[in-house]
Image (cartoon, rainbow, N blue to C red):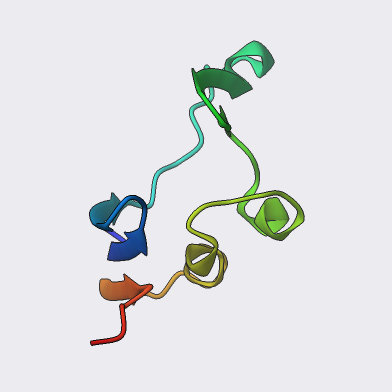
Length: 84
């Protein structure tokens, strides 16, 4: 595991999500057509190089730094901590 991220955001009230991120090798059998899949209203899902994340709309944007500068130890990242 690379890191665990908690994202707190406002979406019709306070929302909280937890993501677990892992280091994985790129699958040799992955065909180019497999790179663009998944649809959700208002979102587009696709595989892309980590170094290019700053050039697209990526959510949560606060994770880009952590994905591009992966530590050697497991990190716990908290994004969007609301004001008390």
